[in-house]
Length: 599
Picture 1 (cartoon, rainbow, N blue to C red):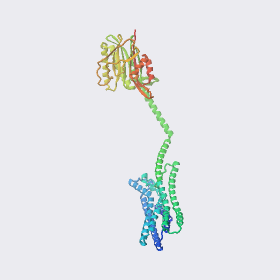
Picture 2: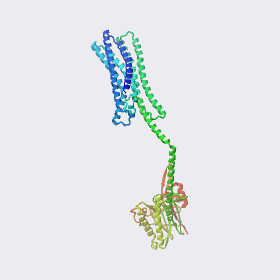
Picture 3: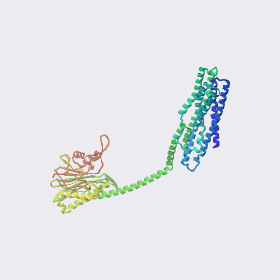
């Protein structure tokens, strides 16, 4: 580390001091000679002062550089090489390492400021001592001001660029290898500002000296007879700072480009472990942060892709086996589920009964459940709709009994409700046919008592199983209709080609509704020959169709069914075909058609 410090010290000292004594000092000396008219004794004093102060300040500046580098390297030596240490750094050690690295970025600016101070420390004391030892001379005062204005900027720019180039290698030391800084931590001196400052510093040098030469000519203070001599001389000397300043600026740009190009070259070879280290306070430092971010992202993506590609065939095979096993498991579950569906179908099927014997009334059933399944290569359906019709006798009178019910819920839930309803209702029917006590009831009492009984049974499910229904009795001899409605679509009457609803006087809540009112009123209606009744579930109205804008919507209006009945003249098969043509049925659909035939 000590060897590195000495190498850097002599490298910086030789370059910086060589520039100072090749460009600014000759300019200052020649400038003083041609712009001063003094006695020989005065010249001796002036030159002696310049030599003493120039030598002293030069040595002092070199000594300060020695102390700065010694201080900087001492801080670096205290740092632990992160890449070589198996023990992680503490937070305090990380902060210390960051502070040292930031100090390294600031060093070129410190050298540039020191050279400006050195010129101030030379020009001002020389002028003041000359005034004290000799006499106050306005030309010396003006010369001092103009000397500083033309020399300080070019010295500042050159010292900054030379120092920045010299310390670049320090960023590659092990101590700094993994010290991460944020973009905001690095002092900013972008290339727009750098080139602008370099341009004005170069322009200030000839502009100031030529301006003062012209001023000296105008006032007669110039010390040469032919003004072209100093102009040509200054122009010749000016070539040196122009070349030096251009070189150090170009070298700074080139070093930044080389660092970026090297990193991109390694990245192009597939080396994603490359790290771009910011080594200056310019735009390339900002690019280094962006490149590191891009490289990190690409590295992660490459690692992910490589992991995916490694053993891809094995992974595909394993995944395929998993999918096949999942498919087998699903198939087994499907078979088991379809077996459950089939069991429900077998239990429910016996309760869907059409047992009517009548010369006056013709009864037709239609039932299509939404849920279809396949079991042992046969297709079946289950759902919550149920149609039941019987011929029973009450008080020695023959009645046609019908009920169309819809248990709430889809698939298994609806089918479960229909199964409970069918079993209970069939029990009521068989009891009516065999028990004389029930045969002696009036149709109104029979409907009231049995609907109340159904309500009490479904209440035991605590509102989890609800059933809507339309239930009625038709006296065969007179054609009188007695019916009840429990939140079910209304019965449709087709008479003389016109379809209308049979509006009930009172409609009851669904079976199973907690707190439902007792059954008291029964609706009555007198049928006429050729009348046709349609008792159906809401599935006949719930259709998925497209509107005029081409958007899907659910069509759910009972009035549409009236139009369908009229258009099809009450033919059940045509009604179903018309419903299917309008839209997609999205629910179970069931209809009982009862026509009052003439003898």
